[in-house]
Length: 235
Image (tube, rainbow, N blue to C red):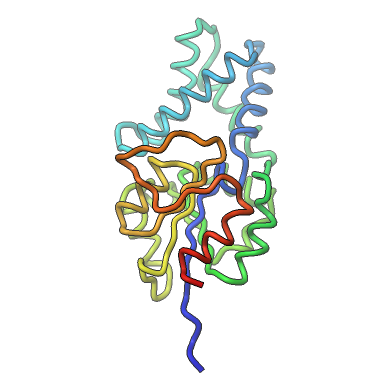
């Protein structure tokens, strides 16, 4: 009998499996309220925009992880004229973010469906302590053969060094048998392209595609991924 061919699915965590957007908004609002700062819709939206920009600077190597954690609050407070301590805001926000989790709709059903068929690996650029706390709260670690968090790996997505370090920990890994799945073009999809991996872009908000970061496949709901993986792997 032939041994079943191994197939690898590298899954992003934030806004692919866990709903980071909701967790971020809830934690920022609570942190700012505790500091006596405004936390209306405009403030939350602007923080999210600044935070996304800071993480993009991390991805391209323009900023260090420790720098962006406080820098995002410094930029927001300066822009909006808030009289607050950015370091204390970061501390309160991170403590709240660690305390729970929200799932992207269909995430548990997806993991239940695909984990018996494929080797699943989690890839994340988030802070190690925060991600580990959220994974513990979500109780989903058992679905994955291994979990790769950039702070612990020593490199960030989309750097080839991040993926190379991950591949070394996967027994008999072959890039042609692997798929990267994630919501970020600049992190997940670009990282997959850098390594010659098949890429599946999770795009529930129907953001415009980018010609300079072309995903091999695109889908807008997690319940569509099992059938898409079957297509990718020729099943």
